[in-house]
Image 1 (tube, rainbow, N blue to C red):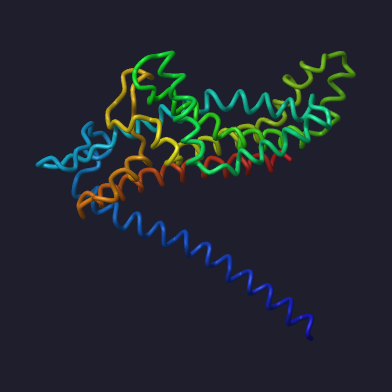
Image 2 (cartoon, one colour):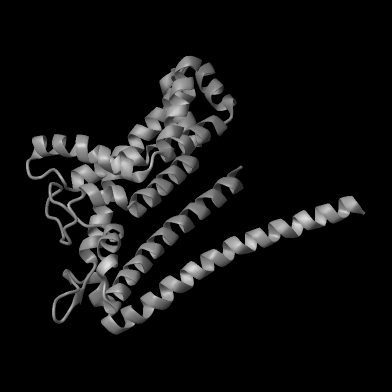
Length: 288
């Protein structure tokens, strides 16, 4: 009886905890959409999403966020272009080439990178990457290139960890069979193992996008924070997240609604990314 009581208690205890998690998510959704949707309806969806001018203090005020959307997309694409190849190749090295001594150094290093606070990455970029970019490309060094380099570094732990786990999950018979048929080690890895692990690699790609597009403080320090549509990767930009951080402290009620609507757009982007990730994981399970 006592054992059954403990089992039932723990069962309902964990059920309540899971409900709290779901309730927290629903409350966040309610807050964002209840504040954001009325603003978008009043201001106009087209003017909000595709307006080129963000000037809340103008009379009349302008709340176009297309420049921030473009800034977020550019920096995220740059981060993926930099982070995905480096992350995948690092994962391949750790899974197939690294000896035990090297792996014991690399694996904790990757985990440590995941635990470094964003603001520390930002200060690192401000002191190291910004001067290098300034010297190479001119200007003040705070631009799309700098932000992309930093975000590319920041998403490496996510990409490396998931890619390595996916590569190790591929049955060894795939690699061994390829080698037995006369293929070299490199061909066996890149032509057999990597394609077999593509669902996990794509998942790391999607999660990397989610991390990059949602990053705030590090990008705030080095992206230039200029709400304009860039014509060059050497120009500064403002992302959706940094726009919220910069202006929320002094926002008027109307301005505050516009910032929450910006957060709503960002939330929808992240929701789309997570939905894609969910379907990819589902297809991977069906394949297994």
